[in-house]
Image (cartoon, rainbow, N blue to C red; front, side, top):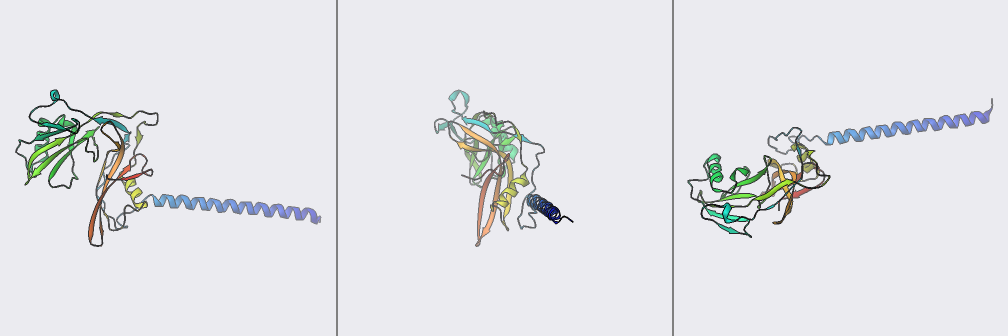
Length: 263
């Protein structure tokens, strides 16, 4: 036997075996990473002690960023007795209508359609918690412009009855310019909540009070606004016997990119 050649052959076989073991090892590592990632993307909120509401479904919904600017009103567009403020971008008007806090939404809507500027462009804000106000939000393509005082009708209540209202309006709403602003499929509501969970915004014992899809402004100036598709999540937390409520906004197209708190 040629021990020199046998020794060389043994070394080659040993190297091949080790290469094979390395390949098997990395395959196992990669497989475990994928499994952990897949498992991580599906949170059982009930088991985590987090209360969430029924989540709205928007199957294959596509959205894009939009732009708009505050409308400056003039007398030719308005009727009745009113005043203007904030560089003519806000209407102030006394209410002469039989409305109280318990009136049906249809009653408020009929009043707004009649007395407000383009009232049909606004819808009732269901998760408003201020008992002294009834809020209607401007809509774009049937979705609300979220938490935006430049596109709202706010009816002031006094002893349960409507006394006056203010109105602002975002004009010239349209898709934003740019090659990267094509309509894209949004992430669903559960993915938005999971983003909050993995970034510790949602914790055991928290209650998600509402989840809404709409447009949230990342640039909020009178001269112009940029609004991005967003999930609005209102969370109630208990800590040291105190209740805290916060509202967060998650990019609906890239939920992992940013989380903004109500400002």
